[in-house]
Each structure stands twice: as structure tokens, then as C-alpha cells.
Length: 221
Image 1 (cartoon, rainbow, N blue to C red):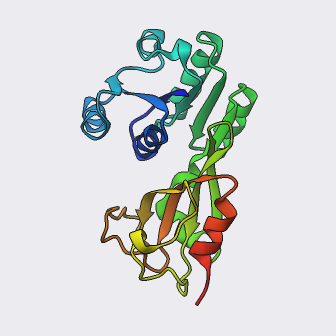
Image 2 (image 1 turned 180 degrees about the vertical axis):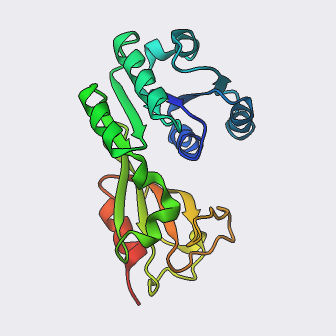
């Protein structure tokens, strides 16, 4: 599957990395040269500087052959305009947009965007004060809804608290892409990464395995 992601921010970069690791072809567009350089350092030459509201930039990214466009910038106006161009001019089969206000989310729906993701669900630093003890949040479906991006909060008395990520049994095909502490800061993902109470885990999971993953990560002592 070929996906074009607009916006190389906190959503775009980890999403691009995970999709590439899953075997998909991904291209990222961002107006910031610094952000594009970061993508290129991490993922290779799969990003370019450009204004995604201009057809020329989308054409350069090969949008006419894309299966999905994901608009994940910090601007609702840019996300909406990009999705409309993708649908109307480039005939992209599926468009996904991040909406930063509830009013705009309703507008996105009326504009025919296939999937609207509320930015409220993506501001993970604030989840710990707004959610129940150990919720499962479905952030975004991917790959024709066979895979989904999810967030799970670790309960204080969870059996996985104190475990290293590498020692935690996960369902086949699950990939942890972010680990966020109670202060809203991301933690490194390496062999020494330890799961702590109230951490937020962001993962790519097969929809068939999500329930199992939630049970593993929220089991109580």
C-alpha cells in the first residue's frame, strides 16, 4: 500500500516509521525543512519540503497513485484543503484527517473525508487526567481496518509494571511505537525501557489481537 502523510510532527513521524516497518510504501510532506530533515535522518529519503495545499507538491509526492492520504498537520485548514485536493483532483480512494476542534471535525465529515480523527484523542500528554483507570483508546484504523493505532494506559497495580518492554509478552504482530510517562514525555524504546505505573503505551495492533493486548497490559496483581 502507498500512503502519503502530510505533516512530519508527533503523529506523522511515528506513523510513517511504523507503516514502513509493516512493509508499506510511505512518503511525507511538510513545510518545515527541519522536520523533513529529521524524517530523512530516521527513515531515509521518503520526505520532501512542500506546501500540501498546492497540487504541484502533491503531484511530486506521487499522490495520483496513493491508496491513502493522511493529513496530520497542526492546521485544520491545511488538513481539510489537502484532503479535498486528494479526493477531487487526485482521486485518492481514502483520506484521513486530524481535526483539532470539534466544530471542524463535523465540517470534515460534511466535506466527505473518509475518516476524521479528533486531535483530543491524540494529545496523549493529557490523557492521564481525563480517562478511567486503564482504558483502551482506538486512535486510528489502518490497512483497510485490519490494523489499528491504539493507546492503553497502564494501571498502577498492573502486573507489567516494572517489566522491561523486551520481557513483556505481546500478541504476534503487535508493535509498540511510543511509551509516554505521566508527565506527557516520551520514553526511549530500547532493551532497557521499563514500563511504569500510569504510563501510556501507543501500539500498532491487529484488530484481532487488540483485546488480548489490552488484557496483558491491564492485568492487575
